[in-house]
Every structure is written in C-alpha cells, then in structure tokens.
Length: 121
Length: 327
Ligand SMILES: Nc1ncnc2c1ncn2[C@@H]1O[C@H](COP(=O)(O)OP(=O)(O)O)[C@@H](O)[C@H]1O
Ligand SMILES: [Mg+2]
Image 1 (cartoon, chains in turn purple, cyan):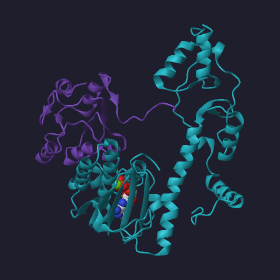
Image 2: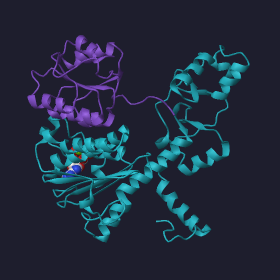
Image 3: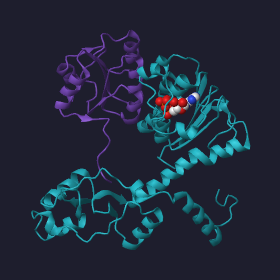
Image 4: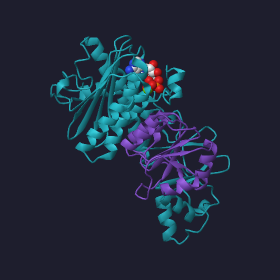
C-alpha cells in the first residue's frame, strides 16, 4: 500500500515530505517498546507507536523501516521532526487512538510485522 | 580446543570428544528442538488442497489430524506426485495419506534422535504425546540448528568468558572472541558515548550505520550490525552510569563491533542474557526501553558474541558479524 493512501485513510498530518517516491508499505508494526521493534521490525514496515520522542524515529531507521506513524499524542516535538528529516524517515501523526488506527489498517489486510512466521521448514 | 597443535584426530580423542559432547547435549530433547507452529489439515480435505497448502507455504509435508489434534497421517511430496500420476488428486486426503508413521515421544534425547534419523532415513518426523496428539515436527535441520545454538550459548556464557576471567588478563585490552590484543587505535569506526540522556541513545549506532553504508551494499548485514550495536549503546546509557565507546572494524568477510563502558557492570551475565530480564527504571520504560530484550537481541543478530563483566568493572560486549551469515 502506498504511504499516501495511509495518510488519507487515517487523516494524518504529514510532518515531512510524503509523496509517491516513498516505498510501498508492506507491513504494520505497532509497538511502544523499542526492543520489540528491534527484534521484529524490518524493511517495508510502518512503525505505529504511541511514543513521540526522537527515539522512535531512530529505532525505525536502524531496523530499516519505511515510515513512522505517531498516534494520539497532542504534538510531536521539534527534535523528533528534525531527526526524521535528517534520517529521511517519512513521519506521520494521527490524532486517533492506537486501537482505531490499527483497526483501520488491519481491515486493509496489511500484514503484521511483529507477528512471527507461522511456517514449518 | 580440539587438536590445536595440528595433530590428527585419533580414534581415541574422537571418543573423548564424543563423550564430552554427549554431556553437553544430554539435556536437549525432541520437545526443545521441534517446530511447534505447524500447519496441519483434516482428513476430509482433498489431496489438491494439501498440494496447494504445501506450495503456498513452501513446506514439504503436511500432518493430518482430527479435531482433537490426534495425528492420523502425513501427506508428503511423494504422496502428491503419486496422486497426480494416478489421477486422484481430487480425492479426500484420507485415502492417500501415509498412515504408518514413525513418531517420536517428546522426551527422546539428542542421541536417540540422531539414531532414529539414521535408522529410518525420512526427512522429518512428527512428535506426539502419549495419546497420539501432534506436538511438533522435527527435521534434520532443526537438530543441527539446536546443536549450533547450544554451541553459541556455551560460547557466550562459558568458554571464552571463563578463560578471560581466569587468566585475569585485563579484558579491556583483549579481544574477547579471538583473545588477541586489540589495537583500538586501528578501529575503522569510533564513537564516544559521552552523553547520559536517554533521548540521545542510538546516535552512535546511527553513525555506525551510515559509515557501514559507505563500505558495503549488503543492507541486511548493515541492519544486523546496527540493531545489535544500538541495543549495546542503549545499555551503556541506561544502565552503566558511565561513559562508553563503540569500536568497529570493517573487513571484507567480517565486521567486528565492541562496545565497552566503565560503569557498574553486570553481576550475573547468565541472568542478564535471559529474555525479559531487566533492571530498568520506570522512567526508562516509559521511553520504550527496558523490555529485557537487549542482550537477547544482540545474541540473535550477531554471529558470535561474548559479554564480559563484573560488578563495578564495566561491561565489554564484543560481536562478530560475518558477511556470509553464521560461522
Ligand atoms: N552496560 C551495562 N551496564 C550495567 N548493566 C547492564 C549493562 N547492560 C546490561 N545490563 C544489565 O543487564 C540487564 C539486561 O539487559 P538487556 O537485555 O539489554 O535488557 P534491558 O536493557 O531492557 O534491561 C539490564 O537490565 C541490566 O541490569
Ligand atoms: Mg537493553
């Protein structure tokens, strides 16, 4: 799914440039624990998180995630936005609850980045 | 160390070696090794459905169970080929599955497993409980994986650590992995962790990541290194109460990373390595850290890892990442 579609779906505020050059979003990882993101996150993932510190952007960047969506928080600190620019990480902000945001994305059947593989072999 | 001095392995020391290894692995049983998230089918499905499932999930066999998960049979690739050739691919599975199965009990030990794999020569075996309910599947690959895992854990927890501590050399000057003197000035990358704000944790690892990107296109290798280094850096900031350094050496075949601090140290490394173990404060948790997954994540993403620490003597974490995966 295109990032711009997610922006529309969740009525997001875009905090840095989001356009068609952004990579496709293949999975959603919802987490507030950065270690979870480090354990399971990866390329193609949009990180949906209730944290708004620069840390969430840095963590997303380290695992090679494709975008960060900050949920619910009233505002996103300037330091977080600055870092997202520096690391070229698309940064979105939606004022809805985590439950609702994830519900909407789940309905679109995007896969769950934090769920472990379910195959033998 | 096996035959370090170049001597050949004689029959006698092979026996000795096997005896030693037997001790190390005696606590591994089928239940520890088996894969438990299994895709199974019921017998009323068709062979065609089994074939599709195997194709989509890229598996080479499907266990067939009843509603209580009792194992009834197995459909293998061979069964599928026979069904295709005999034109009965649309029949229910029940008619064509393999029914006489060799199964393992969950408590068969490693020796027993290897013996059975040699005796029956199938690629995989189901593990069932005493009532015949399917618990898991074991393939040869799982056995090898379990042995390698064990080696890596032993490596981390015992061998080197003990040796390093017992020799009582100053581990701040030695490679924990190779034992060689480390020339820190020769590091290709150096970062001084001289801040204490949790908000900044990861700055050094992000820099290391940018540096590595200038050296290689292997994104997944860079990703593994950055993640593991990030966890180590975060630990220095949230736990050590001191400063620290990140060193990295870039080589064609291996990237070596060493993160060290001079802080309060870890009293029980074994315990700290456990998933979920954490002494982090609530404040740190609110910032998204302190899940107790840091050291386990480093272990997971690196190919070799050694942690050496003592209370009040700081922590040294050394990790090797091989370009061609685990070594
Ligand atoms: N550099 C360090 N200095 C002191 N203690 C540490 C250090 N690194 C790890 N530890 C100890 O090991 C524990 C486990 O570390 P880790 O697996 O990274 O989990 P977490 O950081 O989430 O607590 C920490 O809670 C801490 O007690
Ligand atoms: Mg940690």
